[in-house]
Amino acid sequence: MTAYRNQLAYQEAAVRNASAIELVIILYDILSRDLHAAIEAMEGGNIGLRTAKLKHGFLALQQLEGSLNLDEGGEMATNMSRFYSMLRGQMMKAQIQQDAAILRELVQLLFSVREAWVELSGRLAAPAPAPSGSYMLQIGAFKSQAEAAAAWKTYQSKHAALLSGYSDNVQQADLGEKGTWYRLRVGGFADKEVATALCDRLRADGGACMLGR
Image 1 (tube, helix red, strand yellow):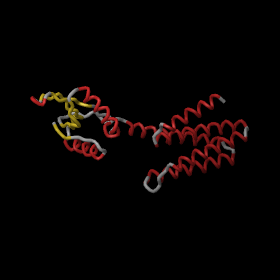
Image 2: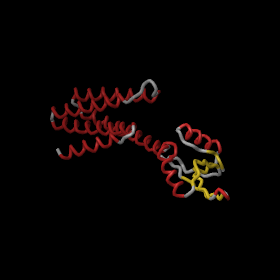
Image 3: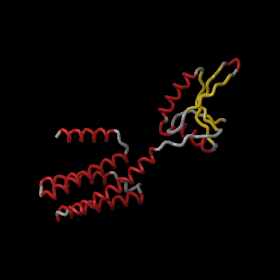
Image 4: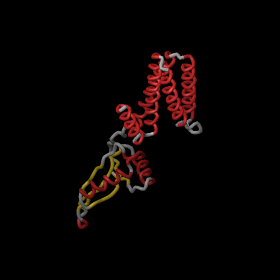
């Protein structure tokens, strides 16, 4: 019972911090565990446990179906809807015929599709490549390096989705009577259009930036 409670606590923590794709992966894991347990119960002649595990599996499958956006998801959403419908039909067939072999095939299918979701999640989470080139985006000028560093932390936190994979570049500038200033910049970019596009997105997100070299 303690192990079960620990598992529930882990799942709840994972769900609270999960992205939409990670939630799908969690549901695949839950469904797979239910099917494994149903197989064991079926082979052990435990009708009550088999029924309970399949019932719980159907609930997980219902959550997966509910996560689909058929209006905007295009062909992928349609294909996944068909896949989930197939799973439902085969689970019902296995329950009626008490056929563990059907459930084993479904577990293998779930594992294959789950791996595709994991790969997609990894690609989406991968940081952007570090830019290298002569174009820079200046986002501010400060009287000290400490102020520039603090400003970068605030700016990066506010625009984290746009600045993933980018690092700051602080340039010291002696402006004569105006004193020494520290220009906080991001870059450099080999392509001016790429730099301009990022600047436009930062401005749309409420940030300040200026293209330079």
